[in-house]
Image (cartoon, rainbow, N blue to C red; front, top):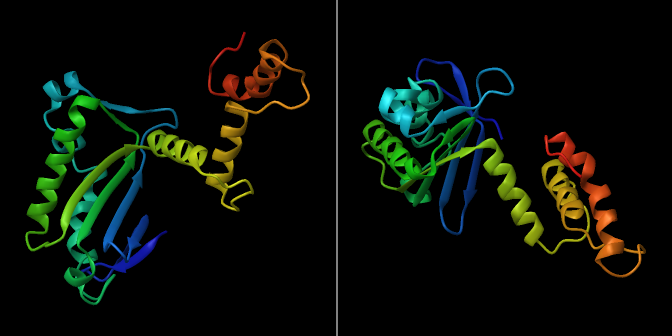
Length: 203
């Protein structure tokens, strides 16, 4: 997290999350950006496209301005001494409060890929772009944690919160008695406050 690097003008910037798998030589550069008041989300749906154009035109270099710094990040000596040798796949991820219509996601990712290729014409690694909302990332963590077999705490705030959400969302109720009529009220009470907190009424 917060991988710092020096820019060409002598200043400093950072990558929000940098992740690397040495076995597959897969590097992930992830930027997390949200703007506006705390409850705002920004739609990029069919109507938005018709009015504002491509995702990049709509963005106006707000969230995607970090692309301009990518050539400095991937040059030799910043992350790796020999970037082309160490990176065979490069994933660029934006996690934001842009909600992109499902049918426009592939097209939007392609437009970002094209911009990155123009910015880094000598890049040899296979390029992938992921455009996620913050809630999509959180949801995937919850889904993956639910599938994980670990019973003890992880010691990681995000994973442990996901673990408890999964516990109360699909609990094995003990000592309430047998049958759905006995266990269902326990399940409803256990999750009630959480559902109310996210704006879902529980009857």
